[in-house]
Image (spheres, rainbow, N blue to C red):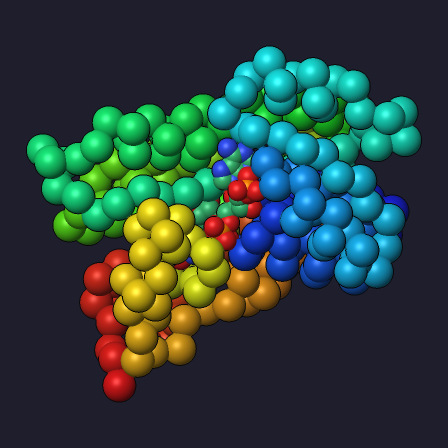
Length: 250
Ligand code: NDP
Ligand code: 8X3
């Protein structure tokens, strides 16, 4: 079903995006790997079983997104599946003590970046009458937690955009899904805490978090249903987690 399909993964240089690339490549898909760190993408491309193409891309830059998608080589233009995964969190500050730069980075990447890529890719899918969009949401898009304020707001926005796009594409064969994980051990917390490795490690201490591969398998599930089935959202979390901040540690 996924053999020779073109799959664009944003944020493929790490974590969930890199795992999605591996899982879909193993299914015979052709991978368009997008992120800012080109060297990481090239290294991933060397490890993939199938064909891939690396796209250095900062999703926060609308002109760059448009020109990168618009000038893909002919044989990579017909994207079948868009995985909007690029995203980040910055800080756990209280809102009234938060840093404006952190807010802008989260909103620009998680919300505006997702919009720019979607706007660049989906018209081609509509024209061809074929395609699927899978957005990586979060438990943070389903509940707010203390100190999560702006990050949660961006993931609530991802949920709204997933539902809105589904409505806007009604009457076409295109499918729209989100995958909403709880705690996944990736570079996410290192980025959130601006490189503070100890603080990042503490997030996953004493429990077994999800792996990036666990999430990639859920993404694959959405993409491998029969064409008439739209999975709206897959929510998954570790067994040791019951809500965003309610976890059981050994
Ligand atoms: P990682 O930090 O491991 O990966 C984040 C990816 O996003 C990197 O590949 C990074 O690439 C890319 N990225 C960040 N900013 C940009 C940008 N401006 N342009 C292009 N790519 C960008 O974290 P995860 O794999 O955990 O995160 C992936 C997604 O999963 C995010 O949307 C996150 O919100 C979501 N998520 C994560 C959870 C977790 O607990 N880890 C739980 C729920 C959801 P580069 O820096 O090379 O550009
Ligand atoms: C990432 C999961 O709980 O840190 O979206 O917000 S959480």
